[in-house]
Image 1: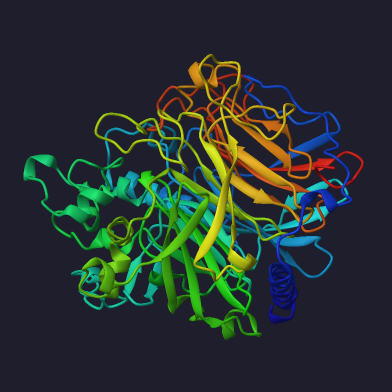
Image 2 (image 1 turned 90 degrees about the horizontal axis):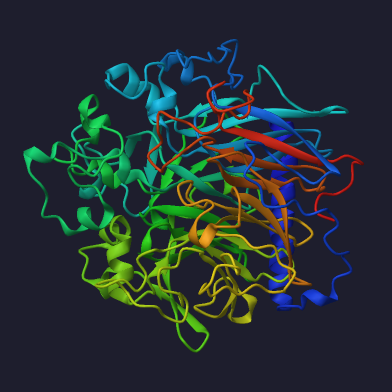
Length: 611
C-alpha cells in the first residue's frame, strides 16, 4: 500500500508549507478575496427529529454506531435490540462519533479514509437490558465502544459508500495496546503494577476533538478521561491535590468500570489515570501500527490538537482543555518537519516546548512556558503530567471551556471556541475578565488571535472576540455577532476552516436547555457557516432531537461536507433510558434505537459546498 499512501502525505506537507508561506507574508485582509458570498438557503431553527439541510443540498447517512468497520471478513451486523456482544463491538462503529478527518487515497479524491473519534457511551442504549445490572461483559463492550475508527470510503455517481471489507479498516479502543513517548515516558508517575516501565498502556478513551500533522498522521485527543476512573467512596477519599484538580477521585466516575477492571480503581492504581488525558498519534495508513501517546503535549482534558508550521518549518500544536476555568495551550516542536512522511517525523512530537496562554485586558497576550524551574515541580515529567497545575502557577488565563481550534488557511489567524461556563462570576469562582466578559456565560463565545509576525512560534499575540453567542431576542442577554444578518447560535464547539476560508461552526447546547432561557429560539444543535469577509453567518444544517453536531470536515475539492450527528436522543449528559429520538432508523421516538452516524452532504448540482 506504500504507493497509495504517498499521495495524502505529499498533499498535507504541501498544504502546510503553503500555510507557512502565508504566515511569512503576514496577515492579509479578508475583503481582498474574490469569493462570492454564502450561496445557500439558510435553514430555520428547528425542533424536528431529523437532519435538515438547505433545499439545494442532499445528504446520506454513512457509518452508524454498530455498523461493521470492515476489518477482514468479520462484518457483524448491528442488532436493533443492542444484543451485539463485546467481541462484535470491537469490529463495529463505536458510540458517539466526534472529531473526524478525511484522508484522500490517490490524487483524484474518489477513495479516502475517514478517521473519527468515539467520545463516550450511553450505557442505557448500548446494552439490550440497559445499564443495570453492570457486568464484566457490559464493561468490556463499553470499552470497545469508545476510541477511534478508521474506515475506507469510495465516491460513486450516486454518492459515497463504505468499502467493505478494507485493508485499512481498524478499530482502536480502550483495550488497544499503545506506547507512551516523550519526556514523561518511564516516569514514576506513569508506572503501574501492570506496566512497571511506565511506557506501555492499554487503550484510549474519551476521544473528542482531533488534529492532523503535516506528515499525514491523525491526532486523537483524550478529553473527559476522568469519568472512567473512580472507586467506592466508602473506602475513603484522597488528599492528592492533583487528583482533585483532574477529577480522578473516588465516586467521581460516570461509568463504574473499576468494579470489573481494577486498573480504573483510583485507590488501587492511582497512577493509571496519569496515563490518560494525552494526545495520541495514529498512522491511519498502517493498520498494524501502534498508537503513541505524546506526553510532550501535556496531560489535561485535551480538546483539539490543531497543527500548523512555524516560520522556520517546525510544527505548532494548539490545544484547549475543555473544563470550566482551564486553559489554552500551544506546543512548539524543537525540530523542523522533515520530508519523508511519518517515518521521517516519528519522534518530532516528543521534543519541544509547552506553553499556556495569558490574555491581557489590553488585547495583547503571551504564551507562558511550562517548565519545572518555574512552578516547583520535581522534573519536566511532573510538569507535563500535571499541566493544569503548572499553567495555574504561571498565571495563564482561566477560560470558559476552551474547545476546538481552527486556523485560517490564508491569514494564519487562530480561532478558538469557548462553549460556555455557567459558573463564571458565581460566588467563590473567578470573576469576568476581558477574555471571558460574561457572568453565567451560557451562550459561549469564539475568540481569535494573530501571533506576533504571523509566526506560530511567537510568544506574544493580539486577540479579540469574534462572537459572543446566544439568542439576542432573550432580554438581558449580551450577544455580539459580526453582522446584523448573522443567524444566532449557542454553545459553539467544533470549528473547521475549509480550503476557501469559510468557517464551519458546530454547536453543543445541552439537550435539557434547548428551547429554554438563553437557547429559547435557537432550536436543536446546528452547523453554521461563517464568511469572515462579510461577517455573514448562516445556519446550514440542524440535527435531530438530543444530538450534538460535531466533527465537520470538508473535502479538499469542497464537493462534500462530512459531519457527525452525535448522541441523538440524549436527554441529559449522562444519557438516559428514555431517548427523545429514533434517528436515523425510526420515524418517531421509541420506534428505533437512536444511533450516532456520519452524514455526507453535497450540492444537488455537484458544486462546492458553502458557495
